[in-house]
Structure formats: C-alpha cells, structure tokens
Length: 94
Ligand SMILES: [Zn+2]
Image (cartoon, rainbow, N blue to C red; front, side, top):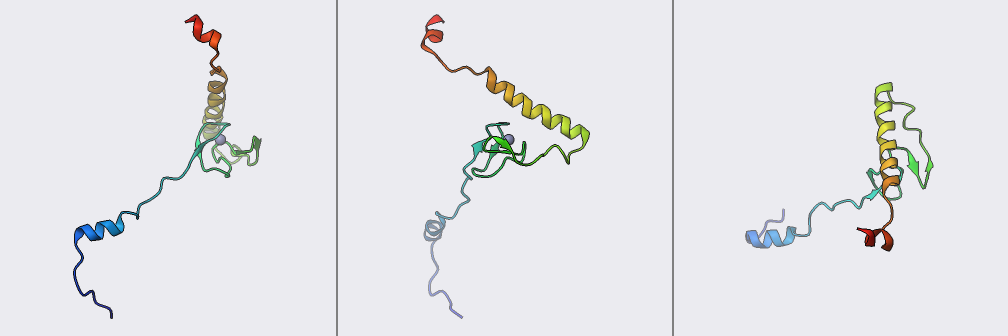
C-alpha cells in the first residue's frame, strides 16, 4: 500500500480543497407562478413550461391543498399585472 512520505500542512491541504465546494444551481423565476425553478425544466408548482400547461398539478392534490395552490398561482399573476413599465411621463409627474 502506498504510504505518504511526509505530512502535508493544513495550508497545503486547504489549498487543494479550495476548489471543492457545492455550486449554487442557476435558477430562473417561473413566468407563470414566480417560483424559482431549474431552467429548461417544467415548473412543478404550476405545471407550465414554455407558456403552456404540460402537467396538471392540481389533479392529484387534496381539495384543501388545491385551493391553496390555485390561490398562489393566481396571486402571482395578479401581482405581475400591477407592475407597469416605467415611462418618462410617469416619472416627471412625481
Ligand atoms: Zn410555475
């Protein structure tokens, strides 16, 4: 069996390990419900991908859970509608 000839210092060990760390996954916001999801993957909160429904997530849920989920999805949509793009006229009025 190979045996280390000499002890490596903490500094040397840590320098070796400095590139070993968990990378934060690149997440995007779901355009439908606003949850953070992996890119190129359907959103498992609302079941939408590329602007259309792919999976009916509400189908398998209990009645209580279904209501909560529907509310969550609708709430984020309403929130999106309220946001208006900034215009020069709107800014100059204030
Ligand atoms: Zn979604």
